[in-house]
Length: 439
Image (tube, rainbow, N blue to C red; front, side, top):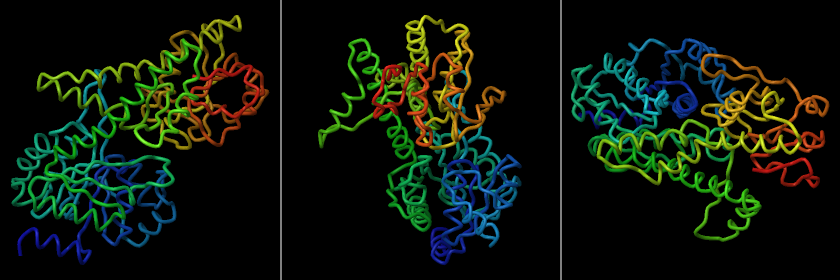
């Protein structure tokens, strides 16, 4: 039997052993889906704490069902380890590690590179390797392929298959999870594309769309998030203009979205957050310079979005001025540090950047977030308020709403009489707007 035939047989009779490198917001839900569909799965992570939690059946990711994780671990279908030598026990491994930006806003692919080096040491013939981490077009073929071939002594396409399938995770989405979101697969060679696609069809309920190469799949992922970045940049710029013109941008958007075709609603805010939208355009613009090309439209939207935390604080200063108070020394309460509503994920959260901008002005800042009681930034932990009440709110000079959690009583917040700067339009239905200003 050929390698392809052997792998197809293993997929069909569910004797294929799965692996997931990186047990975070992307990796753990994927590992659970694999195990849930009858494939023995091993999770790999360099953080012993995560490994211990998984092996104890204790969930730490919002999109994973606690009881399901515990049951899969108890039954032996799912386990975790920091020992990469166990890569030799898997037939398929997905790399789901972070791809942040460095201090110079350039791609930091060290996690991907280091994971691939470790995998290469123990890669056995007949294994499929798939990168899921968002990255620049060319990463799979230019970075992973030579590392895997040199580290293992095996040849891509003959001894192992290599592909890219971008993660599509939207934390807190009540409709689309890992299991039912359509998947894109691009691989080196037709056989690799066919077999890797077959793996995803066996473990996911969503459709699988196969493209001609890893580079197409990598660029597709960048397009998804750059599209959103540009449109959010557009509406943020319009929000600044509308404020100068005395026009409510939120009302403008509500009117525009009544059009049943040709328009999709995007909303302004204090900045961009999450693990993809604020970062992906930087990956593309960085790679584009290799070809002497400047992504002018993309870079313009990035500049607008990156400036929103600063603009938010400038607007806050004007609100305080109208109440005869200065930013320097003002007591400011920030409501919400998660990057989107009703989740505990604060990666790249604009609220944290807003807090940093407030600190630069000399303001005294506290925060309250029912989903994020504390957060870590630049090696330091910041503790939030444990509760809020009208009495507590009245001790502040300004309240700024940076995340629109549905569990917060904004009517109570606004009734305290303190100036409120609403960056998420959550006070839309509150009748008395005397102390409310909306972004």
